[in-house]
Length: 61
Image (cartoon, rainbow, N blue to C red; front, side, top):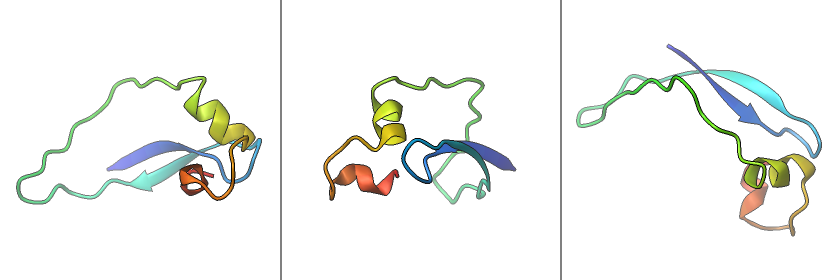
């Protein structure tokens, strides 16, 4: 199964990335999302790179 995610490879750049969804392990379930939301706070911060470095944001950008 394929999944899609929003990634920010560098500041002010956004891409939709396709990835392989792994099969669930024992005790896990796999759910399908029909829709999701993008927040103007979190994603805008990741997009612009407007955060102190180093910080936890670094893993997203």
